[in-house]
Length: 554
Ligand code: N01
Image (cartoon, rainbow, N blue to C red; front, side):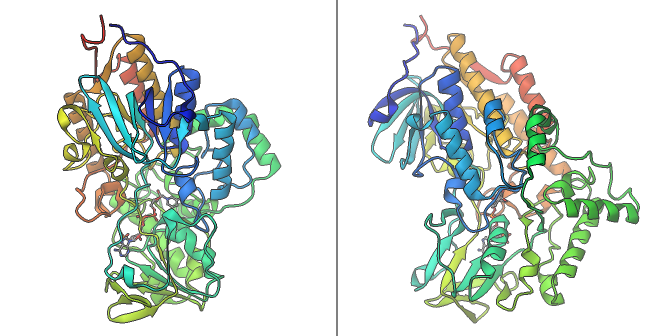
């Protein structure tokens, strides 16, 4: 029997027991591009699932006040269509969540992807059937979809960390979470609001709501090296220039460690004079965004002394911006090197603590004891609140993948396989899980690589691998055990040469109690990673087993 490619169908009309070539997980940046690429460019039948009500992924859910991207909008967008690039006009240097969501809706309309998507549908199981040589994808509507391939865009920061405090159910006020902010908004005016968490989400939210609430209490466990974003409107001239040179800009960006256009960094911070360092840091602190880290010195993430020069520079700026020295000290990190936790980008964050209606509570020296009927108790003191906002982060990288009930060959679940931490090949495939692609999965060049570009790279790698498999009359493509072990070693060795293991961050899986500590990202930078992937393809998918089963190929 020869495997035949199913014809495309009216997917919207089907509810049960569908068979497609590829099931796509999620309808965010990954899902939208994957549907277009696989369906419109490769002619495959696809079906994407998302528990959200529409497209947008993280930008659908994270509608909290102040949410915006921290990579320049002109980079935080797709590059696969020149027309799309030309027709979308970003209004700000760093777009706010409503504009990014509008953009994703525009892309979804433009490429008519929604007819291949099922919303408000959660995937509950993805199980490999070795006899039928396909995946069986169960969803919470009771349907089963079979698919030869699965491409997951489940999201790296999508499964929230579980609440850890006793008494949450006793609280009589309102409770919100940044990752599930009500789409109709939350009226915080005149209320006593407590925010738990000072990562990127909390640091974006806090200055925006401080002016409207009666009182804001910020519960901080670990201070961050928040650095200025310097957002502003994009002028017509600036935008015209980007559009005229978009192709070159994208090419240059893809040669950069982080996938954005940036100045070439000088070799070593500790090798520079104090005057030079001050000038360089002032320049990039003023320029804003990740440029302070990536355009200043090359050794900041590898040399502790060099890193300390930047860490101290940022502490000094905090001391200048916060009027009360005791509060400034509490806001100044000393427990981890700069950049070893993802640097939150801020606008007026530190000045917010100069307001009379804002209080900073240190929950490091005395942790949150419990939530009471009327607020939060810390070290025996009750903080009275009308509203609690949780901004406590995510079970990053692995959480959403493990939550889908993925079971590979021989009944081995991904959860069992990753009991001691993720094991992948290139962060995109895992041995024992044939025809399963994790887009920007753990151990890929992600988190430090502009996400939309990383996603495009991976969707293209995975869809080309699928095409290669089908074009050669093969049935499965699967990472080999050796290739996977080699990649895990590479990722770990690279992490050990860096300063990343010195922080308890989600980069290392350290923010979730009980999660194995293990590097979640490849730290060699986007260009090196892209080259490795290109070499794998060039070598005929080196490190992958490509095979056919006698039952299917006659
Ligand atoms: O989550 P986080 P996030 N008691 O994990 C605290 C992306 N993102 O949602 O550091 C008290 O960074 C925790 O304290 P500690 C971006 O990649 C991007 O803010 O664990 N506090 C920390 O302060 C980002 O890095 C944007 O000691 C507790 C906070 O909660 C990633 O998402 C915007 C606690 C969690 O910070 C995650 O950011 C927003 C406890 N028991 C997010 N448990 C953009 O700008 C946790 N915390 C594009």
